[in-house]
Length: 215
Picture (spheres, rainbow, N blue to C red):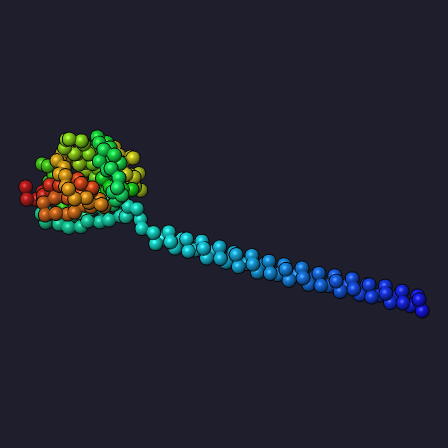
């Protein structure tokens, strides 16, 4: 009888151990499943956050958007293509843009102008075509407007004024800047009846252009 009781106790202990092991196994599986689900949720959330961040980047305003000015001067079609930076409370002339240094006359890729027919600029005949525009702002003196054959990044390696080559100049024109009390926040070019207009910060410029066939 005593041996039978001992045997039953051993069996009960064994069964108890098996039950405890089963409970621990089930608990471990549930915990692992919960952890995997949490990781999956974290990965999904991270992907959504990345996508949201990319969308925010796409929706963010461009610092210097590319713009075009199109019009007619003395019967000649003219198109300006330029990057338009903003002042942003910065000192532009003699600050961000140094005096006496060739400047891209805009932002990012080289500023370009295209004439549909031959034109006259400061007594020089300029053939129909596309040209890069550069500026040399000067303190207490006329500014220099430059037309250059290099304008295309892929063909000429042009990016801003970094690869500017003076020997490829078509012409240089001295233009007297006018200073306005009004602030022009974004650099803007205009096609006017008698030439190309430029305005940024307080500076205003006009480059006289006329139809070469009328000369």
